[in-house]
Amino acid sequence: MITVLFFAQVRERLGCAQIEVPFNDEVTTAESLRQHLAQRDEKWQQVLSADKLLVAVDQTMCDWQTPLKDNTEVAFFPPVTGG
Amino acid sequence: MENTHILVQQADFNVADEYTQLSQDDSDGAIVTFVGKVRNRNEGNDVSQLTLEHYPGMTEKVLQELALEARERWSLNHIRIIHRVGTMELGEQIVFIGVTSQHRQAAFDGCEFLIDFLKTKAPFWKLEATDKGDKWVDARETDQHATSLWQ
Image 1: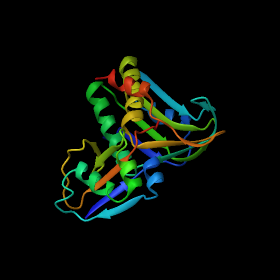
Image 2 (image 1 turned 30 degrees about the horizontal axis):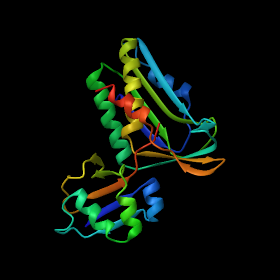
Image 3 (image 1 turned 90 degrees about the vertical axis):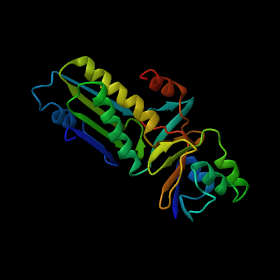
């Protein structure tokens, strides 16, 4: 299983904070997970194709080609604005 | 590292108490602190409240990594970082960064580095209550630029 978390505007627009996605051949990288989720419907497609969307794998920000393993935590979120 | 203290909390902090913690060590000749506050205007809107969301677990991890990176660049003794989450009113304190060192330049640089990188790397997000409704704060180019100057 891959645990997928969403934060801030991304969570708000999707109306979803967390989902579980079965780990399989379709979701081997952060990018393929994004593509997989974008197929859900128009809204998911739109939100997850945002230019500035960021991804973290196991709580480390990373690029879209980062490989995924089973039991990984992946998070999608907008640019950060703390401080 | 025992001289690194990182807290992500809802509660406010007291700068005098933090300063007391930072100033225990007679080998230090310099203490630099930074406090970020909720201000009343942003991007032309009147702001009445600020709510901060974060990614629990990742936030603390990133702040620890930034503290380590600061120590690699400068000779720093104590580092204290407190970042509040939840809803805050105008004028309230959001973030505290305190750094000590033998000499002022390392303390100034270390403190500035930490706030610059916190703003662009740590997973916090600001939601403003404004006169035009709730608005997620956009990441600022100037913050990205500040980070790039440290490369």
